Image 1 (cartoon, rainbow, N blue to C red):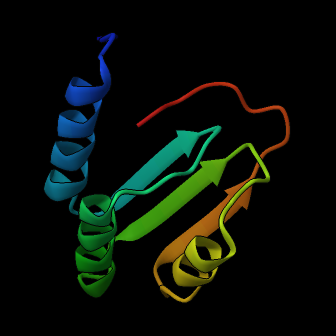
Image 2: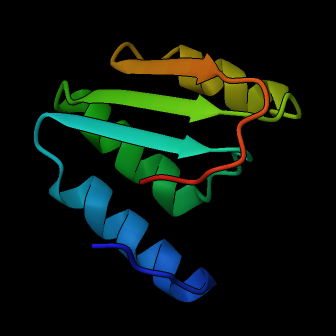
Image 3: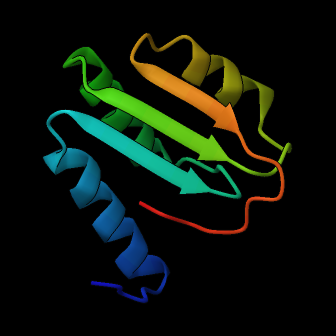
Length: 88
């Protein structure tokens, strides 16, 4: 089922999706701006050895955020040129 969400709804659903994931998380978004709360959830899932895949489409990724993500052993980060969709 497709849902159109505003910013508040999107943040809630994203947190819920990450929290409930047990095996794999796939996040696809042209822009990768992670809130502190989302970072905490990703770190928790990384500790639990959940496979986390993040695909982003804009090369404006903050170098500190990139370094943080690439240092998490269960996170795979990929760049996809011309990405316009957001899927969570």
